Image (cartoon, rainbow, N blue to C red; front, top):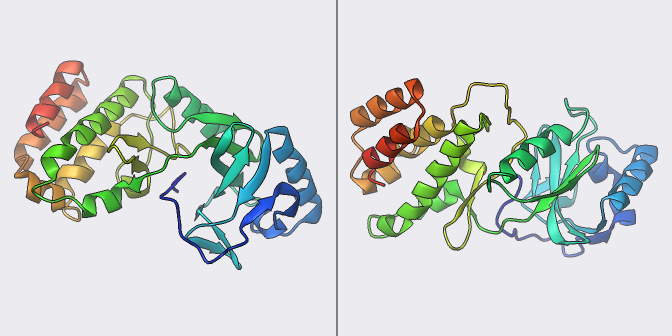
Amino acid sequence: MSSMIETPASDNESGLLDIQDIPSHVICYPTTDQQERQRRIAELGTIGVKRVLLRGEKKIGRVHVIDKGCVSLVVLAEADNGVGVLKIRRTDANRQSMFHEANMLAFANSYEIGPRLWTCSENFMLMEYVEGVLIANWITGVTATTLDSLKPAFRSLLHQCFTMDRICLDHGELGNPSKHVILRENNNPVVIDFESASKARKVKNLTSICQFLFINKENPKISRHHGGPEIGDLHKTLRGYKQDPSEEKFRQILTTCGL
């Protein structure tokens, strides 16, 4: 699930609510437990959330939200330090709290990766709102004439994935990062949604993102406009990187990809 997306349009014109007015089927999704609702409202107050903005492309009943996943709902929120993204743990989530995801994001933040984590509690995680375009939509706009100007974004994204490999943090969702990478207006990529991240798994961030960008047959547009890389050469370079995930092998990947 994506942590944040482009500022969404919505027909929910009265979506800005004080925390006391958040519907129980949103704050306690998928239940409507009033006792749990009051407990969660009090918990929101402890992390500085003042109001929520119920706008977005997904709907919970008649209410709009940014996203809905297996673990949490995502909404915009006004907090002490500005407008951010609020993740609300589902009452039926297979996680007991939001602390694991917050810890993974905080670790990534220490290497300048991911949206900035602001705070976390048992049922909520509050973080920076990243405004931009999801990578799947960004790729749709790639043309032969614009690709060269976008190459710095590719280099930055691959470098972030290499950094995560080096610090042994596997994101877990970069095999299909369509909803897990946002490109800001300046084309600076931000890796989001560390819900499935782990420091215990074998890392494969860089190889996964290269597969998606340059090898995936369901996503041929970049390779078609790029005029490469030659798939056989890239497979060989990625195999070498798997055996020796060094700075030198990473540079070879960039060279093979024309970056």
